[in-house]
Structure formats: structure tokens, C-alpha cells
Length: 93
Image 1 (spheres, rainbow, N blue to C red):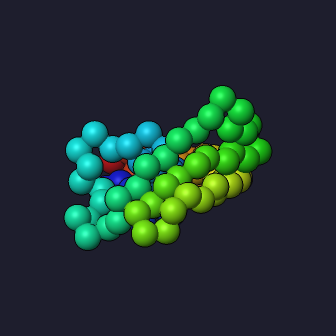
Image 2 (cartoon, one colour):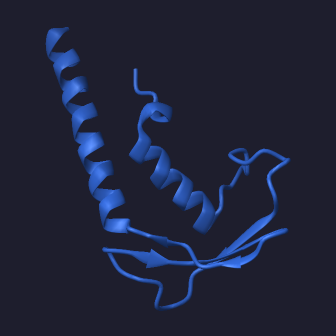
């Protein structure tokens, strides 16, 4: 069974997506978490890294930088390993 919660890179990509684009159900954030808003300008970065603006209630404005290329490479490696496991399980059946 595929459990995305144990896949660190999968979770990190999902968290970044939720921060930058939002989550339609907003079920990923506890109600006790501070209110946040994110913004990405036209020149936010490239594959190697990206920077976005994030405002958080009580903390103000921050400009986090994410090593996007490293994150996506780790995600691909993690995904490949899971696909190999799935293929092996299918072949055993």
C-alpha cells in the first residue's frame, strides 16, 4: 500500500504546493495555525531555487527560498523506489 505520509519528499512537495497555491479543502492546516498568505512575483526563480513572499499573522513578511531542483530530484528518486516496489509486488502475484 502506498502511504504518502511516510514519503518525505512527496510530503515536502505537497506542503510547498499548499503554501504557494493553497489547498482546496484547507484540511491540511489545523485551525490553531496562524493565518498565512503567499505571493509569487513574475521573477520568482527557476529549477535550482525559487523565492516567494509569505505573510504570517504575528510574524509579518518573510521571503523563503526553496532549493526546488534538489526537492524535485529527491521526489523523483523516492518515487522511482516506490514504483520498483510496486512492480516487484505485481510480478510476485
